[in-house]
Length: 318
Image (tube, rainbow, N blue to C red; front, side, top):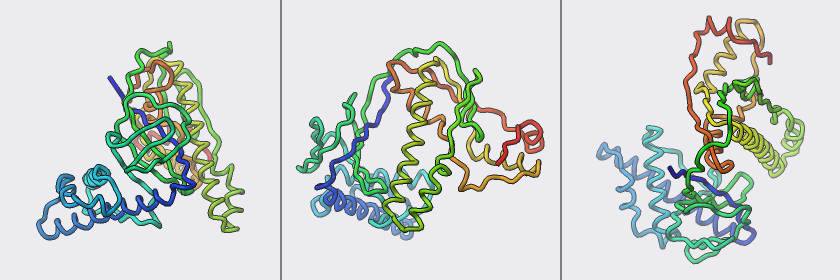
């Protein structure tokens, strides 16, 4: 069974960032139009506009906006999907000050050539850190908090096949230890927010916005790097992986109940480091790490009531 894999490349945006920014503003215009016309349709006719309705209302605007018609269609589909998902009358407005750049596209009307991509006759070059694999389907141009632009290409790849590992592993996600395997191996990571706290506070007091954004990006990259390495290690040595489907919210609640019953102070939410190893991360990485992937099952672990949880769970100090 084929699976989807997304390849992300950094665009050489020294000369093309302004053009991408203008297209990002045009995307915001389309998104806000869909938001406004959906509100009007609900007030007047008491009905929700579908993606098909939004595409018909935005037909013929591609030349004026400087976007491809398929890009505008993708924006309408994404808006209709997210509004239905979050069950809201309207979504947040997009602006060039508070929204990062996002330009979706279909690969069928683009040209991919080695280390460049051609969109509406304009060539965007990127650093080809690794070759594309599989059949390209969709993609997008995205912007990060530091203003850097990336191109994301989603490809359909074949199933790696049978797993290489020999063991069957069950994983319990926790707060004190990021992950505990059934064979006794524990995976811990230091709190990166605390590690860079002094450097981050110094930059914030000096009001160096670019330096603050760079530190936050470094913390995010370190978390992602740790998660990739550890999940790859688990996938390569297992043929079957079972992950407990207990959400972080329930774990935090149980931790609060345990600490409160023993008279200990709980951690502040800002100081609580995020879990770096989750079911989605292990599931995604196992789909393309190595030549073969293990089978991953998601099982539901029983949640004890507060009275029993306080007696059975170990105490985790702040």
